[in-house]
Length: 85
Ligand code: V3L
Image (tube, rainbow, N blue to C red):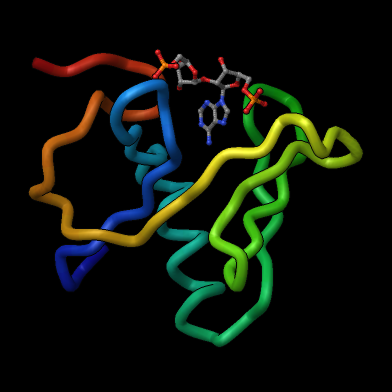
């Protein structure tokens, strides 16, 4: 986002950055003070809970990951499942 922050979801031993569009959508909801945000991941609806800081696939509570807002410069695994070195 403009101020150098991005949104991340948890991987096995590190964080994945959301794709830019989704990160911006989450940031917009966050800035508006909304409690949650609906996103689409590979055709599935996920809810990003901006109070609990988790994402969860709709109607599949076991598919739950932590999320965080952090600087775009932090070490990360990659972006939306695409690895970077
Ligand atoms: N953006 C992209 N893909 C996602 C997202 C998202 N926000 N949420 C889930 N998936 P679940 P390691 C992740 C993918 O939570 O090695 C990573 O992006 C998720 O992909 O059970 O464990 C990697 O591609 C998973 O493939 O609904 O760190 C992959 O895991 C699938 O949706 C391995 O990462 C089911 O996730």
